[in-house]
Image 1 (cartoon, rainbow, N blue to C red):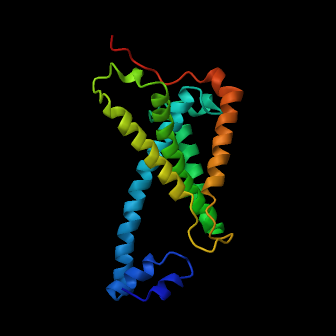
Image 2 (cartoon, rainbow, N blue to C red):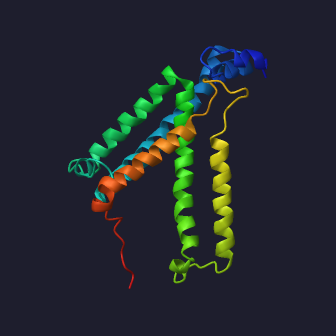
Length: 213
């Protein structure tokens, strides 16, 4: 393990390459280990991009996003939502470029992704609790009274996770160490609510549901 001060002093702010080189004792060994990580990230990126483009397509199909008629089109040649895929690729590329300008801004976007995902889980659980869980009475797998306890624990855990992901990375707090994820979360939530009021409530039909009856 190399000296921690040297790792923190790496100009790029990403000491993993130097750590591998110091651990293996050669630049070639460090590059080999780093190449493995790059390969893993490459394939993980493909999966992430595929999921993002399909989510965009699904929301567009249901009329939930601006320009739904464009992003919901299926390319007849490749049998994929090509427009949604291209837009998702562009957005992911732009998000990656943010790090070149500001690491604080990049960390805010990565943090707000987890916060938004957690909030999307907590909201339907909260609504289910608020309405008395009667909607799941006829579900194939029913937890009974334990469902209330599990739902409450889930909401409390998600609230804790949201607080943790909005905390600053260092103390004392400076403009560069400040965690702006909370600001982005409020912004995205505001835009989503505004868009729903303007257009979503008129055009959003919800996902197609097949009746088993």
